[in-house]
Figure 1 (cartoon, rainbow, N blue to C red):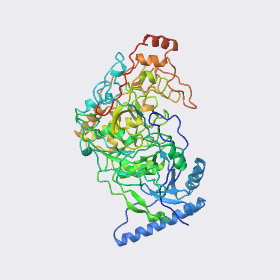
Figure 2 (figure 1 turned 90 degrees about the vertical axis):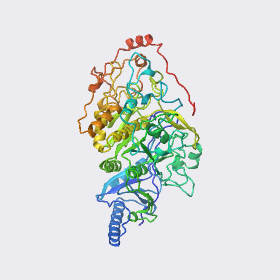
Figure 3 (figure 1 turned 90 degrees about the horizontal axis):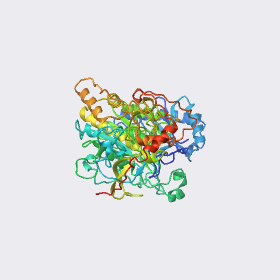
Figure 4 (figure 1 turned 135 degrees about the vertical axis):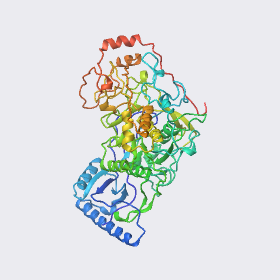
Length: 622
């Protein structure tokens, strides 16, 4: 009987095509492997050097191998010679079948393995789709058409939409307290990076590429860069073409056709684009550094690669290449060099449409114990939060419109830890009236492989998440000794209350599009970067942070009146119950009155001449 090696893959529909903001319904994943942890499993670690320790380690691995043989035999797996085991995470193994499993097959084997008393958990290794979207380019920092999302909180119902910034985190005000330190590291787990004239080399640390799927014989794989794991985190492009699907339907058949997203470049731009350099755009932190960790290629990211990328970013040991011997006790053939620049903040701007599972949670807990905060995008399906944003101790982030209500596409629910602007697009019934153009940051002109660096307006919870990650880096620049719990507490205690309205309804399954956030659906409030830094400064001085006495912001704008007259922004989710409105302020976590349709229609006519949003296309250097 033999046991395993090589890469495991599960496919899920690619996150989004380049011009689409939110996927409506994710496809059922194709499962290419099962992540299994045994009770009291030995930790994967480098082989000891001393002879006595080496012998004890060998004996432990032999016992572990025998336990594995009992597990797979007891679970009734057939054709075991064709299955493989590969190490993943701190102490788990990836069980790789000889051919992809249907969801039904995966459920069958998962149940059989989970029933074994030796097994602590079994989870599927599927590809987590990017939570992203790309819209046309538009220029720089200052002004209503620039980087409004970094500017000060401002506006009232009486001014045009372009001049309202009730939902922004007030980063420009926070810069008076700190613009960051070079010692503070944000790890960005994403598609990798492209060269860009507005991304300073000194702001980038040596990263790593964890995308492991590459078939040397066929010259194909999700990695799309000619090999598996290596020290080059460059983004070669993640496009999926009709030729890809025709040549390798097993790999790419479930993926959406799309041009390359350059998703990682956009996320890094939000955190650390070169600032105060006289060109392009600004970013949250002016001195903080980014650790690029490539975990996503074509069709998204493997759970296995995400787990290992998270651990490496935090300074933990990770396997680069596993032994070919069919033996789980054989361990790694080669280890990834330890990361000499461990990150205190890990940003993950993608996720899968499922509940958090044991392997994710074990890794998050491991990082939390080392003082590392994981920030993750809530997702763009206007439904329940994606994983790993829905894991315990993960700061799940949903996206707001510049006025402060939930963006049409954004996921919501009790697992969300915080809300901030992520851009609002033209989708949904109300899009043409309320869209805000998105967040202007770094992009690339290439349709497949990388081309010239450019700038783009990006929309999605993917770009709300790095707003929070960048704020955490600024908090650490003020008080480097903050614990993971203190960092999360600071973000939430300093958050501004969610905006309210006498017209718009609260977010629910019956009202999943643009809607009013509450503590139950979008976390304790809206990110306030300036106040988060004031919390950090109070902690550094041994003082108790006192949040301001916030006034209730009420949104009853001309655009909102016109929008409500059109009917719901999005149809209710399947199985949703009718919603009953209530008249309590949003700051108290309540709902709002629903205005009579006739009155809304009359008011819509009154405000029909409200200014339209202005769009400007920009080119690099404009």
